[in-house]
Image 1: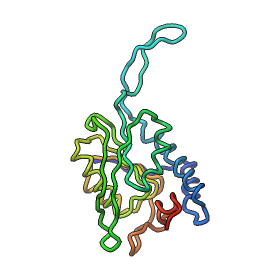
Image 2 (image 1 turned 180 degrees about the vertical axis):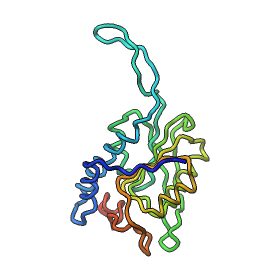
Image 3 (image 1 turned 90 degrees about the vertical axis):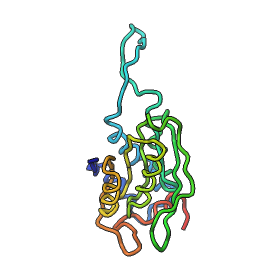
Length: 209
């Protein structure tokens, strides 16, 4: 069974609190999402596999440990997931980026796909699926479904805010993946929004309504 990691880092908690504030503007919201994703990525990437490589320092040859050249794929769930990509790419500039496009039916709240594009050699990569919100879990489950059908195996899901309902749905559908969360909230409301949440992450990232 995959594990659920809820961050207790003071910086992540502080920046997440700022995200929640309704007066936080679009520019600051984007910057906070980037900063939180970078901080969360530091923890989520802790157990990456390394390989030995021979190099030369200014003093002498030596053996060091480095990431394999084809080791990481970051897959944001469009559109809001794009907000987390920049921070992760600062940590791993060589990572490849795939995209899964999903939208939620306003009546049934079920996800529907409209786009899917993945890097090559997906089977050999550690894959990080990212989305700011884990609400019902429908989009996250559908995204992981797509990736597994294309051969992805080593998958981690990362989000900012999660509801218990979404965590349960993702764990039940994909018990093999780890889930990294900045904050676990109380519940979903009647419109399937997370409470207390932070509103619509996509709208707040891109200034839309």
